[in-house]
Amino acid sequence: MTVQLQVYMLLGALALFCVIFFLLKKGMMSVKYSLLWLGLSVALVVVAACPYIMYVLSVVLSIEMPVNLVFLLMFVYVLLVLLSLSVAISQLAEKCRRLAQANALLEQRLRELERQHSAE
Image 1 (tube, one colour):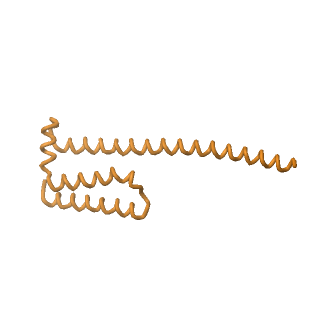
Image 2 (tube, one colour):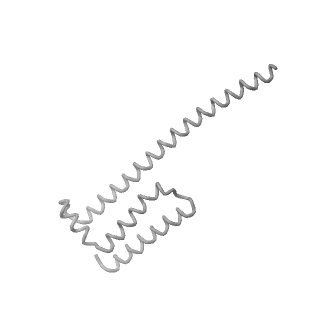
Image 3 (cartoon, helix red, strand yellow):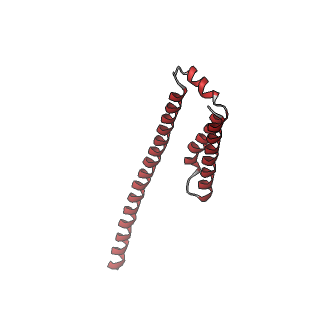
């Protein structure tokens, strides 16, 4: 890996890190969901600073070329993001269902109180 590529990777990782903190500061992203992105930026800084890590990992994992390891890690990362988003969507759908049920019960109670009030 050339020094120029390492510098670009470091700058990109630091830019990602800054963007995540900006989004956190503005309240556009919650801390819960930013952890994966912060982990990615830290991993990018580590790999950019010590590219030899990818070579060692590819040998340890018996992966023929380090670039294949990079693609594998990116694929695993995308799967983690998709899994965390699926969990978040499932939780929001459940909250929405419970909220709709509570709203229906309150509407029913309001109608009953209005009927009792109009009957008096």
